[in-house]
Length: 590
Image (cartoon, rainbow, N blue to C red; front, side, top):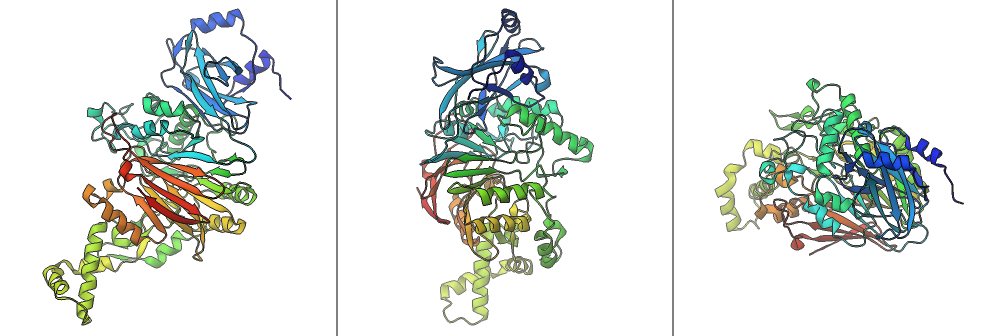
């Protein structure tokens, strides 16, 4: 049965709070001549593109932002149709926007058909926005779902060629953006070495602290043609990570927030309001800018559960500096393990964790997918590498040398003359400090990830195991690509994890100083060192495409050959694929 709204009812619903969505159902009546005169008098341009997001079986959020010629209230109308020529318009309406919501417009277009592609556009005065495409979620029996997954787009680090490449992909049902949609740093900050020459210095010039600051940065990002091209082609399903507020944030603070930068809660509130204004995300309720965990059901094939591991309830990250004695190069392992496995440490918070457990236990899709920010797979590395006291290459070289020394000391008769000569020439490298580093235990390389919140991870894996769920975890944040087998504390294989590289932010090649000619050997060394790790790419920027059917999930990683020019190609020699069947990861490279 169709619901019929009067014009008065509709205008009343349009008067929503900041960031809320106007509800649109079907065709509305034409506006009066007075309204037309007012709309034509107040003009604006669509300089920040259009977007859609949070699709359901019968609805989708439509978004735009109008740049006004003159400050004031603007009338904005929209249309949604089944064809690009708009000869079959099935929904329309109008609302107002103003500086109070940064001239953004968010429409919840409902009453749509499931699994159907639509076209939409906006109008302000006599000017139209571009025409864009969107798609609702399928219902019932579904043969295939295809999702692009990406994260970590730092505007000054280079051109958004990754977004452009993704916009050229055919058959996508949605884009899953796992956070760091923007970065909060000021000019000259993180990964800005080439910003001036590329014409990509950030706006505003300073670090983001106020609502105006965050709005300005979103506007700059949404002036990027590559990002807008992707938004205009496929609906987004998004969550935030840390940089939408500040680096390495937790519920009550952040590494990149200092006391002289004001109250953190006020900064966070402003940042999350701007996020809801500028992203095509459906608010839980009017004015609620805090809660974003939610589920999306792709028929009988995929249940996608989007989590907030960052802003809602996360405890502050542990710090290795509190456990390592630099003088002796020793770690207080007992105290560290007690803290990292404590059942009082939380990343999700009790309410979100209970919701996730219920969602997994009640899920009916063949694949249960967790869309979230940080690596869930256990990434234990030798402490000398994890604390960056030795590179992977140095650890391998010195570790092999130490093994030769141990064999020589034990009188190993299989030690060759060549090996002995190599040992004599290099044994000076095995200083007491180096030997102490080589003897340190394997520890998590990143305490900002699930390795720093081990108890809650175990609860999630135990829930999936009890359900017998086909669990697939997707992650961003690290700026590198990964494929992990997920095992619980009993050593049982519970699921798989696929993690995407970044859109433009540098990865471990930046932090660990991995040269191009050392990429393959370093990647192979890390895969060999980390139990359960099947694949990694530590150097290239890109995204991944997940293809689901009832037999398997396939992850294809795509990379670009440069960020320093808008003229780029896909780095076909770096493309990799992973296929999971019954929780096992099988890697095909090429």
